[in-house]
Length: 463
Image 1: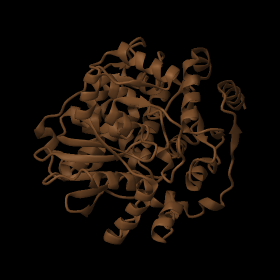
Image 2 (image 1 turned 180 degrees about the vertical axis):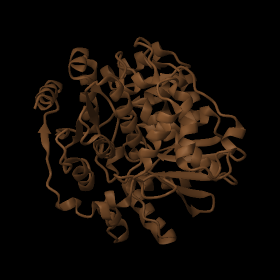
Image 3 (image 1 turned 90 degrees about the vertical axis):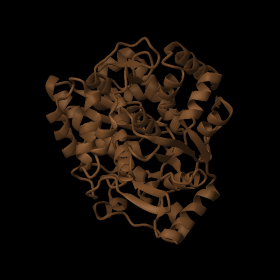
Image 4 (image 1 turned 90 degrees about the horizontal axis):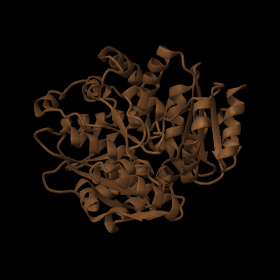
């Protein structure tokens, strides 16, 4: 199994090197040369299996010789041992044909834990073989940062720098990043929004001399290993609802496109995914692109669902690569236009392919709050604002006889202000985070400038 760049000129790599590298040297994202498939009998046999066993069966074909089956199974067991629910990703029924997939039972209460906890374990195995020391730099709109810090805090061969947009994450999200005491983690509040943080991250990766100097590695959703880990819960959810004998639809709150791209991979592997629905908030560039064929950035509007306040959805590049039939030159041209002109026009053939792969919808702030309120009144289930966006859009795409699964991407206690505004209830943090608001914070403010970031990373690594 080899991995290739969506822009076509970077070296082909095995899984472990693609995982450690993150962003390809030509600026593209790694994808597997081929997608392994599972037969209907293999999928049906997953019914009733522990989550960890399904994860091993889904992921192993993508790993080649990078990790042995025993290494992978051990990493999976360690990654999910700290989750608070034995099912790891339980389903809750909201209404006839509509289910909620709870992805917030990990240590930082967000779906990012499924990928980041496992990536942390695989990184440790890979680094132990070589004795390498790496520098992880990540950009976050809220949840990736805390999940990365939780996965890598205290490791002797890893330095972790997380960029988050100053004043544009929830207080719980911020404190999860700024209160760890381990000296190898650094929370950096950048002036600007998430797209600024993501752009500076790519600047660092595209400076190859700096990249080699500090041993730069990436754990953003650009990392293929993270996408792969998220494929698993599409299988567990769909099999619970009758797959492969019954197709299932998924509504996915979508910002950087990684979570819904995992659903695309599951479908290409043979899972009968009838619909993948892109659910966006008021920062609706993906909905507009699928509707009009024009991918054009506008100003990011802060919202009550801040993890979706994104205009440049990195993983959309992978979807474009497949929609253009693997034409890396065409993708590179689109990304050049995005950088120089702030957008691009999707070709008619590629747009048709995208529309066959995805439906879409959006939720306004008022609609999001109303969904939180109405869902609680009808079911007693508290939704975080991101999950509420997914539920609202899912309700518009319900079809007779087709189970719908909305991905609940975060615990409501991570966004207590929005939940309280909608329901009058302020959800408490779970016991292991009960004192979060009292813990001292360590914050470094940084300019929206690549050279300033490089200097800071160099100085912190040498301390």
